[in-house]
Length: 83
Image (tube, rainbow, N blue to C red; front, side, top):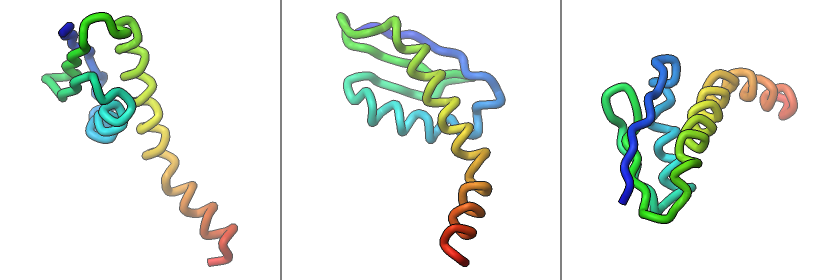
């Protein structure tokens, strides 16, 4: 097992738990834990360790965008649904 720590900027802390949930679903063979100011990742030997930071960044950005646009999405659905 390879382990690495990936720092997470303060702006992404509110969506960290949701991103970890998504990462655990997408990569069940990898271990993810919230650590002080980041994410501790354990990857089995021979797997894509070079992709870890990219996958984490993508999950964090995705969750942040989702959380920031949720009110707009709800308003749009209400408008389209005739509520």
